[in-house]
Image (cartoon, rainbow, N blue to C red):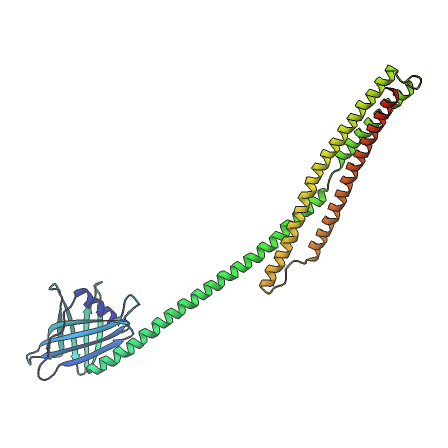
Amino acid sequence: MKKIIRSIAVVLTTTLLLSSCGGSSDGPSTFVSHDQSGAMTISWTDDDNGNLAGSLQSTTPNPDGTGELVKTVNASFTGTLHDGQISIVTHGFLGDTSTWPGSLSGDTLILNIPQQDGSIARATFARGKVSDYNLAVSAFQDQVTQQRAKVASDAATAAAQAASASASAAAAAALADADKQVSDGGAALRGSLSSGLSFAAFDADMTTLNTDLATTRSDALKATTAGAAARANMDACGDASTAQGDASTVGGDESTIGGDASTAQATIDSVAQQVDSLRNAQTAMKATYQQQGLTPSVSEAPVLDLLSQADTAIKSWKTKVDDYVATAHQLATQATTTADAAASAVC
């Protein structure tokens, strides 16, 4: 008879039944039924001709699951009882009626109750007292209280599990991201070190500077040789002027090498930034693992070795660039000094 009481309560609620009628001087006949879905009591009086008038009451869980534990529905009915066959007719607020046929044998009452979907619910009642019904209602209220507590507990457990799963997923994602930052940073730096810093432009421009310096020296020597006999020798002065033009060209070569140095410095700065990024990523990865009480999945040694290689390369590159710049300046100064000396000697 599981959940029969609830299905009966739905029928009663739908027909909007009114309050109960009174009984006879002999007292009413009372029957009680209860199951996991609720409790019901039905009582009637008999006029000794088989005509019945009575009331019933059902108690079921509050359908919204909050507030009051249970919902109680009262109904009145009329009916007949002859030779163990009973038929009761419930009366609705708008004149609606519902007929419940059944049987009464000793202390057992069976009613067949039409449902909204057209099916029949078979309800079995036992002769009892109002106190029996009250006890059943009290037990049912305890049951509903426990069910609500379980629902709340299950919801809390589910929420905690979801939160834990979410936290675990977030933690795993943080570890994966930390590993990826180190891996990507290492790959980028390794690629830059593999490509290295090209000094081909420096070498080519330095070759040009030395060639122009040699021309400066040659023209200066020509001027001083030709002007040895006479200081105001115009040809010698012209050669000296040419030497000064050559020296100016060497100065332009020095500027070109300065441009090479700026280009090289941009590459050095880029690699230095990669070094800083990888070092920061390594530090962040260690912190992320430590926060979760774990040891990094990737050994720190290869990363530290790569950073050391990068620091050494950057230092070497800077030294070499500075050497090119210093040499270019020294040679340009020599060119200017040589040309000006020739001009002073013959002009």
